[in-house]
Image (cartoon, rainbow, N blue to C red; front, side, top):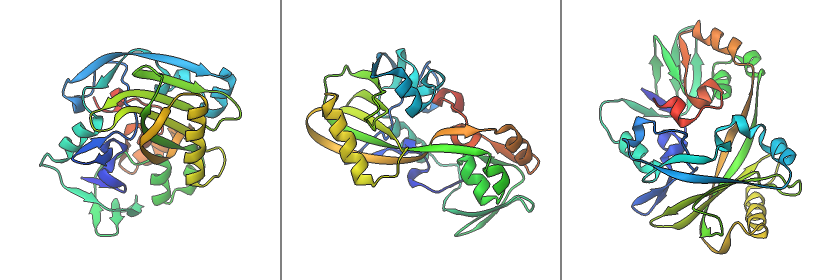
Length: 274
């Protein structure tokens, strides 16, 4: 069973665009992996560019050398938008799905409570963000061991001087942007640019978007009119904390952690969908 709390159950669900979909985040894979894409990956040459001091990039994004966003060179991308594969997977029969916010995880009784039902379990495999799961399990002392930095991701369809597949890291101190990716093109939208803004300051959503777009134009990373602009709030972008003790406590209650959010680790799609 899948118990989840956001549209489509994953960031991979994408944005709806007419009869098609548009990825909410760019998907780069280090190797030909992940059965989700049914072997239809294509190899592309990804250029990495640093705008400004590398120390500024580290302040915004942490050690990108240890992060899945930091890799360049020969990488793999889905032949179609990743959301198309994911939506096809959701349509396959054979699984019971309850899309409902969780109100409580009763670890002693081994019951997950939602607004609509109670679910008993013997073993619970959780891919929910670990910080969120500990909140719903009322394990506040363990939750305090975890830290995170949120971010906004902008999906833009626009002209750009960048090559089809380019990663740009912005280290300038006066810029809110941390990471920009040119990600080929979409048949219904055109050239795609993704921009990531770590939220080190509290700002209104409209202010974040307008400032990020102004910075993209100032750096000449987007050109001409925007044909499409959408944004996604990622609460758990950078995740930190000691998870070993947390994992052992949850295992004693029959809970197995999985996925990038669930294990609270910098795992790639290849790592989580073997």
